[in-house]
Image 1 (tube, rainbow, N blue to C red):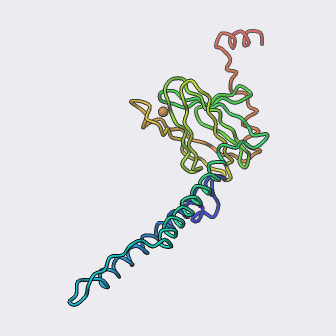
Image 2: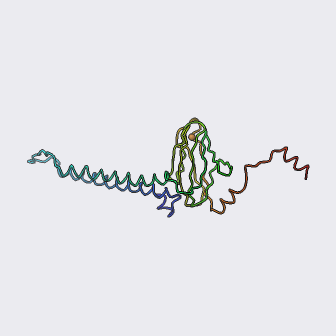
Image 3: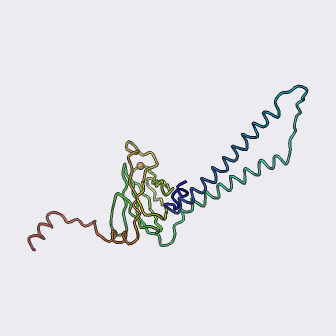
Length: 222
Ligand SMILES: [Cu+2]
């Protein structure tokens, strides 16, 4: 479990998803041990012996209620906790910083409100981010394993995804929907920066690259 090892999760969703994972694994383990132990016990208890007559058992209403009731409650709680995790990526906090995430075979492009465009995603730490997902061609899927977030990028439709990164660092972005020949190479990264650092990066206008001719003119006039 990432959050158990590191002490701090990389994003809000990481903690939520890992908790459900732990919850489901714990229940599965408990059931596995319970069923196995009972099975071994029965093997010894009911093995064939002389003078022992088998009897038929016909229904037991309480047993049926218990073995329908308990699993139903268990899977409903799994669903509930899973849904809480899902909500962290689908409920966009007010005032979230919006970035357009565009996918094409086989690369990512991130467009910011001020006109900046990059192939690596840059975000400020502890700030809610909304990614508007758009595809230039076929279906892709934006996947950031460290944040435990994944959402389809569907051709002809705008999809979205929200997250809040809690830890400064660089994390992988992968495409999680088979999209052709170089799908397995469709990687990028998300760089989570301290707010101040992000602000100064954001302000530097990298979109204006002076054409060579203009530069020559400028040199003449100077
Ligand atoms: Cu793809």
